[in-house]
Image (cartoon, rainbow, N blue to C red; front, side, top):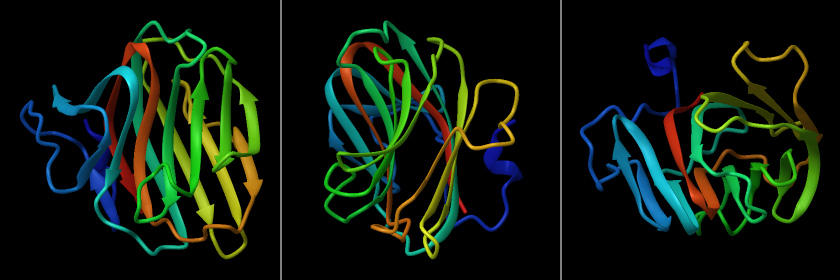
Length: 192
């Protein structure tokens, strides 16, 4: 069962449950690299820098973003990285905003604003295993909480936490990846 069928009153949702295609649909724009839909999942194969962003800009200042993803292949090259971006400007997910990035060579999950580290935690993601990521944001207070479900449900305390008021609005959502030797699959994404 897909998570989006259980969600009410969402401001943005995509379960990618459509035929295999290089057409991502009207909700997404490729900003770098080649993205496609494979087996009802957003997909890209790492061979450089890749980015995909939602076409809609959302003005919500209090929101929860959840997504389910997995990476397959050889993640452990020093320059590999996977990131969920949010709070970015209209110019794209790389220009401004926040990201939750996994850096396999460092064994770290990190929360950043552009190039500023806000928090990090030691994490080792297993290639091929599904993970869920949840970002809880209160733009009025600046609180950002990130939860990583490694298969046993979300932990009680956030995996990452910071207070930062630079970008209070949700604005743009997107995925980015860097490196080679692996594939990224996103099963669904919801912002509410």
